[in-house]
Length: 157
Image (cartoon, rainbow, N blue to C red):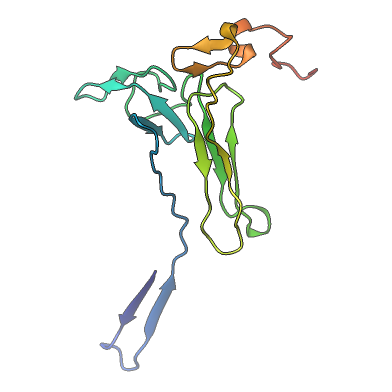
C-alpha cells in the first residue's frame, strides 16, 4: 500500500511516499461447525455461547469465560503459532499440539518464496486414548495426570 501527498502549498513541490508492508492472515473455517477464533495466541474454540456482555463458555479452548481472549485458551487446544519478520527477516509458523488438540488446522502461505505449509487436517481426535479424551478434543498427558512423568515444570527435565 502506498500513500502519496502533493504538498503544492510549498514554494517547491515535495512528494511524500510511504510504503507500508503488512502480513495478512486469512482465517477460513472449513469445518461443518462454528469455530471461534482465539487470537491470543492463535487457537480455536468450539461449541461456544456468549451473552451480550461477552461472557460465556466453550466446550474446548475457552478463554476464561470471555468472548475476547485475554489469556491462552484452556486445554485441549490446537494452537497456531507464528512470528513475523524475525531473524534475517524470516517468518516462522507452526501448529502446536503441546497442550492437546481440538481442531484440525492448516497454515497455507501464499507469499513469494514460501510454497510449503503445515497441516493437521485428519481426524486428530479419533485416535485419542480414552484416558486423555475430553468432550472437545484430546488433552495432553500433563493436563490429565499432572505428574513429573508427563510434565516438565522444573529445570531438571
